[in-house]
Image (cartoon, rainbow, N blue to C red; front, top):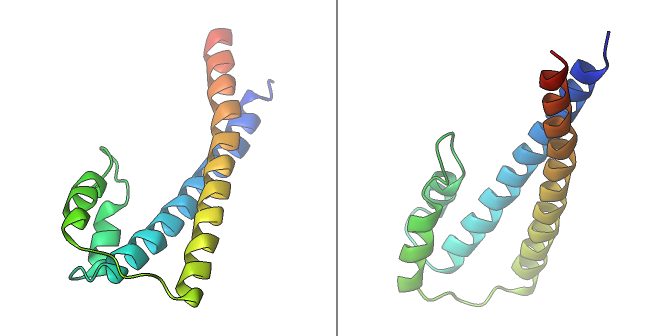
Length: 114
C-alpha cells in the first residue's frame, strides 16, 4: 500500500484550513475598508467579495465601486487591527500553498502509478 492517499488527506486538510483562514481574514479586511469608506452595508460587501465555487465572487465589483467612496483615515486601533488581519492573510496564503503543493504532487504520482 502506498502512502499517497495519506499524504493527499493531510495536504488537503492543510489546504482547506489555509483557505478558510484566508477567507475569514479577507472578509474582515474588506469589511473594515468598506466601513471606513462609508459604503452602505459593509458586511454584505465583505461577504459578497469572498471567493465562491465558480470564480472570484464580487471582489472585482467591490474594487470598482469603492473608488467612488473616499476613505477616512483609520484610527490607531483600526490600523493595528487591519495590519494584523493583513499579516494573518499572508500567513493563511502561505499555509494554503504549503498544503496545495504536496497535494498536487501526490495526486500526480498517485494517478501515474495507477
